[in-house]
Image (cartoon, rainbow, N blue to C red):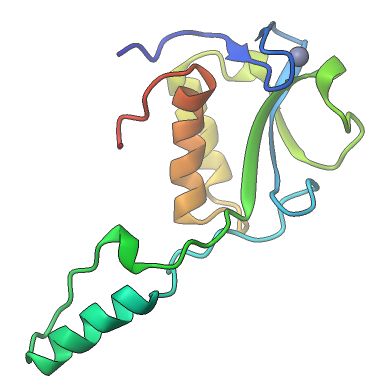
Length: 145
Ligand SMILES: [Zn+2]
């Protein structure tokens, strides 16, 4: 697995984005504008999760180990995109953006992720997805999957 490809790929035209030609945007997934709120850290239990919790309680278990499919699918509140300036449908938008020239390496992407992770609108799922966006944008397999 390689993580050192320095280039970003434009979501719209699929071409490489050169320094000064584009950015990675972080937006509110619903409005496309500046991020407003994080994806909830604690997702609600679905019926299967509630049933598992009830069965564990009835069996006198003190803790319940849930699986990912025990939780509701909650839409992501934060969206990530890489775009050329010329491909951005809203170039004057109010999204949070990072010029690709500022994040040429995985190390620099992690540094930005740690910085952005301090924002009140970034939850733990969003931070994890932001790190994973490096892999996704390059067509690489997310190492956590
Ligand atoms: Zn493009």
